[in-house]
Image 1 (spheres, rainbow, N blue to C red):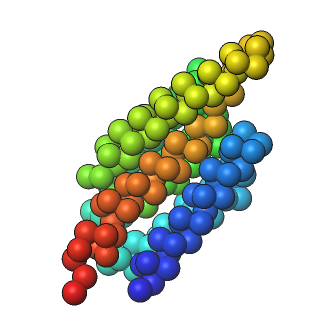
Image 2 (cartoon, rainbow, N blue to C red):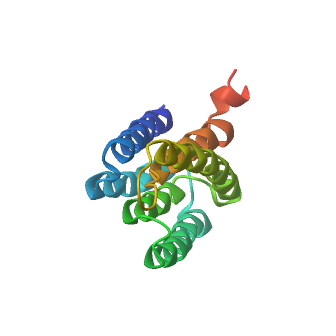
Length: 157
């Protein structure tokens, strides 16, 4: 039950991140830190071994951060998005992380089209600001619901 409580807290955190990114185009550092720092409690509650389980989680999160930091340096991704995706990688099993990336890409593409159309319709100058944290959060919630919740997979008796 602790696992589900922690997943519920993660869901609240992700919804908060999506809302603030949509409203302010910013994801607070304290929220990203809270998501990242709660991951070890989730590992413990779900019985994940330190080696190799937690080591893989940390490795995927570090690689995610490194790749996304490169995208940030190229001005292709926001700093809050980089930190959020790396923090979320601590919660998603490495074998399911590719699904998160697929969902994020699909949702992000739709989001980009919608915001670009809105930007053009309002005849605004410059680049449209895309709240990509919304895509990250939605993809995280979909991946967790599909891959991590036995209740939704029909595995509980």
